[in-house]
Amino acid sequence: MEVDRSIMRETTRGFQTYYSPMLHGEIRLDTNTNVLGSNPAAERYLKESSWDLNGYPDTYSRDLRQGLADLYGLSPENLIAGNGSDEMIDVIFKTFTNWGDDSVVPVPSYSLYDYFVKCNGGRAIEVDLTDDFQLDVDAMVSRGGKVTIVPSPNNPTGNCFRQKDLEDLISRFEGIVVLDEAYSEYAGPGKSMISKVDEFDNLVVTRTFSKAYALAALRVGYMAANRKLTEMMMCVKIPYSLNAISEGAAVAALKDQDFIRRSVDMVTEQRPVLDAGLRKLGFETFPSDSNFILARAPIDHRVLVDGLRERGVLIRDFGSKRRTENCVRTTVGTAELNAILLEMTEEVLSGCR
Ligand SMILES: Cc1ncc(COP(=O)(O)O)c(C=O)c1O
Image (cartoon, rainbow, N blue to C red):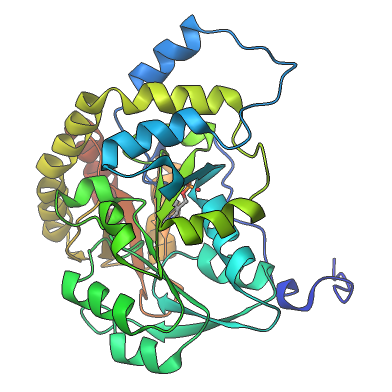
């Protein structure tokens, strides 16, 4: 049905609803969550706790912010927590952009950046990554805007951006630079800038409990910045947006760093195995520092993704998008899941010969 959208905010009229597959018990390698399953410390906390469901949660999630401050050597005032890092990204645009303002978004990168810019009435200015999927800092700086946002590691390409390019961008970009570190745990020590936010006037780092921390269902994200910036953003964020149950579970999860190490080690071990398996089947793979791999398929991307879905495996299709033509993205599984993925992929490919 064709609907007249003229009553919508102008910048949102072209929107479509988000990726939402019908599920029938498939193996999910399409969302880059932790394939080891739910966070065990959080599960224990949920089994052993009870809550006053009649009371509001702590307005600004003090316990979680203290736990994060201890982890990163920051002050709780450097931190804001909320309903997924998606909410944090929304708060950034709500705080720092006015109607019609430009924000710079790299291509390819996380599809919701464009959405959050436009939800807040802004214009998303696309700047292409270079051929090897690195930042074109000169182009981003010269394009300019109120905010720019870069995920490192990048989704969907998987790679980290060069540290010197990130620092160059932060020092030369006139507006706020957001570093989205949703997959940072997988990139290894030394790649994150979260502990350095006080050194910069214009840096905001966002992080999530949805990936390595295996808590996507509970929707917990956070961001760090210098205190001047967090004070402004705290006034704009919806109070109580992080519920008490999720906050408690995230605090419990933070205390079990051993689970994070095991999760990251598994990915570090399995990533080259999956990469080699995909190459052997004729895929072109791209270097990854995260828990997923972008790969260009040797057959039509739609045939591959549909064929895998029919065989009970979900991966994500990026094949119709500019710069990732005929590419798919798969989460790195356990040895067992990767073997299933490769076997099913081989079946789909041989059906095309
Ligand atoms: C790069 C990137 N940033 C942010 C998010 C959102 O994460 P959250 O679940 O914390 O909202 C995702 C989720 O896929 C992501 O890939």
